[in-house]
Image 1 (cartoon, rainbow, N blue to C red):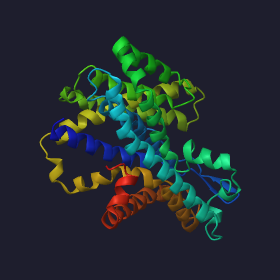
Image 2: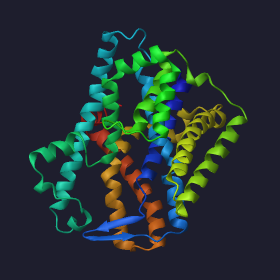
Image 3: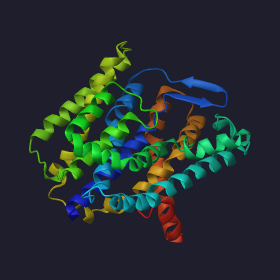
Amino acid sequence: MNKYQSDKLRAISFFLILLVIMVHSTNLSVRMDADFTAINKGLNSFLQNFISDGIAKIASPLFFAISGYLFFLNIKEGKPVEFLGKYKKRFRTLVIPYLLWSIFGLVLYFVLQSIPTFKPFFTRELIRDYSFSQVLTRIFLQPIPYQLWFIRDLTVLVLISPLVYWLLKSFRYLIVLFFLILWFINFNYVVFDNRSILFFTFGAYFSVNGIDPHNFKLNYQHIYITICWIALVFCKTALAHIGCANNTIILILQRASILLGILAIWFLYDNLLKNIDISSTRIYNLFQYTFFIYAFHEPIITIVKKSLYFILGTTELSSFLIYLLAPTITLFFSIIVASYLKNISPALYKIITGKR
């Protein structure tokens, strides 16, 4: 992988993290203590759904595709020793950070629930009332920082990666099509999300078959892909907004928009930044914090949203303002904390970010 390709993956990953934050910034319903408030439908709800439940939905699938591609990149023959090396590395980059951030979220909630001033902001069951089995479940399976589901699923996929390799070698693109069909019909795998296996396998397909996705180029065609992506997201959002009873149509539109969105982002980067050395730009320095932002932003963004609701009230206007302010505040706060922690305790920072 050359410098341009490496920079492209770093830039796209940072952009995807911004989309993940937008997914988690939706605030069309709020629960403060025992009170539950739903924000009235209007332009605010349409915009939030268009962005967070539409445009930003490409984030996790593309992350899984990139993860699958990188995981199998240097696996040549599928021998056990090749996977063993990958397991050792992923234990450091996935399992350890997952457990540490999961415990951090649990402890943070416990502390905040113990402070009378903050207790009304945290309406889920009290951590102090958890049984030992509930604590273990929260740490290992259902972490309070719910964005960790991605690492949990990715860890499972890494464990079954020899099976994924065999399937790709045996059935090639047919296994990807099979998982694609199951994704479109919303099949429940129980042990992981239906996005996980499809897009992880999709990314792995390129590496296992020696296909470099960076070699695919589009000129003006990417514009039409982008327009179609936005149009599908708009149609899906409009149908959901007016209360369309046909959930199958909405599901198909969302699935199709995600596929087009992945293509749009992938080719837009090449066409917009192909003559720019992004490593010489100011934003490039922020890419180093991508994983920290991902792991740290929740439950921070929930705390920020509820605090802003407490200050601004629960109107449609305040909801939209919070939708813009909460992710902005969370992002800047995350970067400040990451930078400070990296400077004062680089060893700890490496551990919690998997040496990224």
